Length: 305
Length: 281
Ligand SMILES: Nc1ncnc2c1ncn2[C@@H]1O[C@H](COP(=O)(O)OP(=O)(O)O)[C@@H](O)[C@H]1O
Ligand SMILES: [Mg+2]
Image (tube, rainbow over all chains, first blue to last red):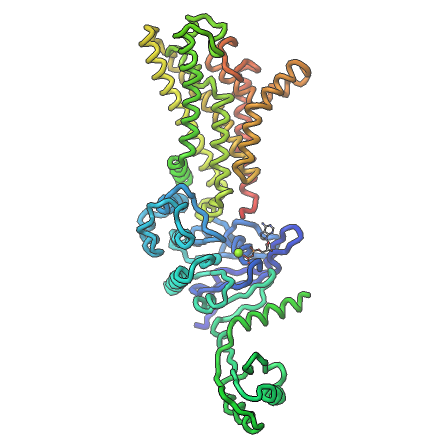
């Protein structure tokens, strides 16, 4: 497990400038074979721009990009990459089936593959309808089908759940997890933390064009904290701040949260009780990725500004 | 390359607008080539198509002997404008629908995709020419039968040069539409500019040059429309009196041929260079 494997995607110092805006600013990114990598960031962070560069649609202003051992856009790299960038774009007057047929012509893929991917994204029974009559969810699924047509080693999906209803999101996420478990490498962008947490093995967080962190999702998730309900809450707050340090304790409406592991729960309880405070609840939870993310991105802004 | 070409043929074949344009060209050429002149002939009244031409000459113009004139006579201007629209909607559509990114993410490189697309368009243009010829031939057979006219057909070589000349004229306009669409990444603007150019600017410019600025004649004679008209004039062997609008001997047939080929080459190279270099959003 620990042997070093050549990454499928290696990006270093990637920059893309549009006039005065730096859409991507010195991004480093590495995707290892077989993992589902989540490229996480708020809208306008530079995700789509980065993925466009990886697929050879736009050229970087500076930086180096290696995909599957080659340069983005090379025929032998494209042949092993399937992608859906931004919104799914197809010929509206053609059926889903005909759209895939002509992509198969372009890609040099056997026709038999078409039925297989249509089945996989659950679009077989609507395949003969015009693309323009599809719902957003169906368009999105056709986009994924097109990305899988080449049976690619690397699948790049740019916010594939964007605009879907909850059921559509759930199906799409299940599909992506299936792809990831089949030995494929998936690079997925998203602005939804929960989604990345559910689907991905590793996550790279981008904000305002810069990578702010790259982590195993487990590692992020394992940050624990204690949730404490007690009365009087203010006294509990000051006691814990004194013992655990000011940074580790935060006061919310009717709870305290302390960034300490579950192994210190008993100690915290004893401290509070000894100070004459009534503790009504004390439990350990995983820190929400939201909090971690918010911390990381605001830190980055503070550094930048 | 073959895959890109086949994919393009599939897109063209299934696109309604392509056939609407073809039908428009067909109807126009039948109305102006056969219906109006024949009505004029049959009723003996004069109309724009027949004014000043002896009645027997009007009939001769409708018989199989002159089928090529009627097939490609409208190519420099009217069918040319339709071919330009074809090039613009096919290439521009890839930008407005965003499908260019989808096909460029497949295997072939940008050059291959575009060349496949242009070859598909030129194939479609060839189909147009053959289709219009077939319709015109049927009309002329019918008229010859009804009016007891002669069933003489142009020789095979004349037919072949007619096809080739007509195809080249439409192809140049189609490529012009394509390169404008690449330049503007759009459909509507290229159509607007191209059609205004074909239907208005060239004729206006030629008129101004002849009457006011004879020194600029070399410029007027270098325009694509003038050369398209000259090529059609040369390959059909029309006379100036019965030539349709835009068809005249501005330059010799040889010169028109080379000028049009040069335009076609420039359009293709410009489209290729631009497509290969740019960012595709
Ligand atoms: N073609 C373009 N021209 C100018 N600015 C652009 C272009 N594409 C993206 N941008 C800008 O780059 C930034 C990053 O955009 P994008 O990569 O689409 O973000 P994301 O996909 O993370 O939402 C945004 O500020 C956006 O406005
Ligand atoms: Mg985006």
